[in-house]
Image (cartoon, rainbow, N blue to C red; front, side, top):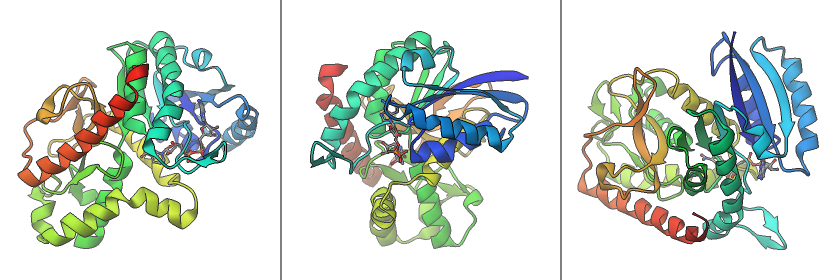
Amino acid sequence: MKEINVLVTGAAGQIGYALLPRLASGETFGSDVLVNLRLVEIPQVVEKLTGTIMELEDCGFNTLGKVEAFSDIYEASKDVDWALLVGSIPRGITINGKKIEERGDLLKINGGIFTDQGKAIGENGKKDAKILVVGNPANTNALIGMIHANNSNQTWMAMTALDANRAKAQVAIKLNVAISEINQMIIWGNHSPTMYPDLENANINGKSVASLINDNDWIKNDFLETVQQRGKAIIDARGASSAASAANAAIETVKATLSPTEDGDCFSAAVISDGSYDIPKGIIYGFPLKTTTDGKIQIIQGLEINSYAKEKLEITTKELLEEKEAISEII
Ligand code: NAX
């Protein structure tokens, strides 16, 4: 059986709990691949992983290989094929009596974490390792990690697939269609309320979703607001951030890189900008992506961006440039 080494940080957290069984079950990497899991937690929490490991054993998956718990990211990164960087300090937590709500505070607290994780994966991970950053602020955390990894053969991504799924869900309700009919749902920019879910380029049977909806007021107001604020709405409703849907989006992102993307479709994730669509180079930006037949991840080129979309792309670009500026001391 082929073996794969998968590292997951924040493994004792709520996304980790929903994610690990699906990584190990054969659903993600296939029924002929043995999945070795490297579970990483902060030292105070690493003990809790013993319970997670027992549960994983008790699932009885044929595809579960060796499962190990670590608090040292350097040890954990040895020969990893995939790293899912979920662990970070989430918004809303109280530290030293201060509730962390601002992105700037989150950037500073999480910046240090991703510096070390980047170095460790760059030095010890497989030469073609793929890394998906879920922990917020995901795009800028991925930038910090990628820079410190300093390993151009590895692929660093930040997760925007949850936003794409949220956008698809709203469209499916509005048009009364199945989710599976909706293709090429692009999330441009940052995984934050400035993201731009693009209904002009999304299509159903090749027809633009925006034209099928034919209701600009709904698209520009209700739809945009619902998708951009969905994370907050879930926190307000359940008192905790999205977990099952976030884990699902991470699984879908990994799967999207394992087989070629069909023509007319894409998958959404943020990768380092190469200047495509006039986005400044050097920020991790949500683009339409495809996996090629030889397994490479590429930005899909040549899509139309109208003037309204351009304005939206500029807003999210500005935010990412500001985030980059805020972490300039550590990159
Ligand atoms: P939890 O607080 O349940 O779990 C986070 C876990 O990470 C904790 O167990 C903590 O001990 C661990 N951790 C913290 N620092 C660590 C480090 N340096 N190394 C290893 N582990 C570390 O949060 P959870 O709900 O699982 O969310 C995790 C992250 O995902 C948060 O930053 C959250 O904001 C982010 N999200 C990102 C989404 C996306 O679409 N990109 C959506 C969902 C989610 O909000």
